Image 1: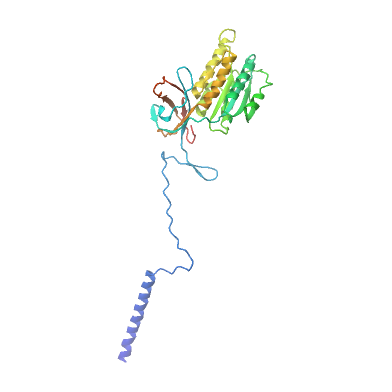
Image 2: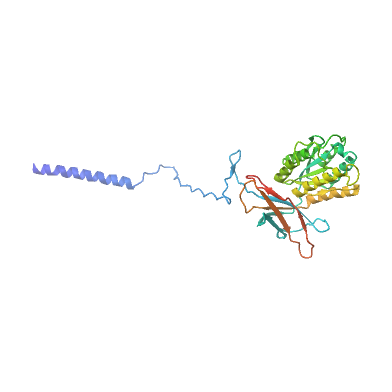
Amino acid sequence: MFKRSFARPLAFAGSFLFLCLVAVSAQQDPPAKPTGQQETKPTISPRAPSSQNNRPNEIDQSGREVISTELVSLTITVIDPYNRLVTGLDKQHFEVFEDKVKQEITHFSDDDVPVSLGIVFDVSGSMKGKLDRARDALRAFIQTSHQDDDFFLVGFNHRANLIAEFTDGDTLANKLTLVDPRGQTALYDASYLGVEKVKQGRHQKRALLLISDGQDNSSRYTYGELRKLLREAGVQIYCIGIVELGGGSGGSLDLQGQGVLEEIAQMTGGKAFFPRSAAELEDATTRIALELRHQYSIGYLPTNVKRDGQWHKIKVNVKAPRGMPSLRVQTKEGYYAVAGKQQ
């Protein structure tokens, strides 16, 4: 009787101890992996590189991230004291300053690259007696241009009209064969249209050639509005002034037109020419075409990363190699720091 009563608690204790051991073993041993199933390894995502200027990147329509480099690009022409083009310089010969602060040049090229170029051609009444010379200027320019250049044509009198879309030079020149000059002069409107159109060009390098006497009297845009656009756009503009300098009743208007063309060219890094004869006209157009083919391309990332819409003045110095005279530079005067826009 006593033996049976004592044995029953011992049996219960033994069973409880066995169950505890089984539970501990189950916690220590992981469940068996099913046959044929590969072990899943953890994936470590690389840390995203930090933006140099702490600016968020944009997302394009396909959902891809677009990194904004904010590169400032300059097209530079170098000439000597005799107004001759200087080629063959290297990166170390140039210094770039933005708001008087020296910048590091990150891109340099002197390749002969094709240009997307707009011809802005005056066909107003003030061009009577000058149109034949203007046509000759255009043909001489096209003959000297890069073979892969593409052109479009804006003609203007009291209104600016797109006469020819981007095409080859010969096709463009033929568009002017039957033009009859008449009406007033919307020079500013035509220049505005040309700047907007040239942005559609297929080449990265873009410029305008403006052929006119510069006498605006019919534009909706003011000269102040045009100047602001030219500063923002960064399009290089060359001008050929078909003018009659000095003397006659139209002398003062012609001088005013010359001043307009000179300022347009200077602020954009181009140049204005005012030929007085057929020979000078051919020299001017040939010179412009050669300049476009023998320029330097320089780029830098500005040390001032604020994109606050303010104007930043640019100055480029060129250090002449030993044995050469002092050299001069043509390039744009500066740019507006607009966020997300390549300058």
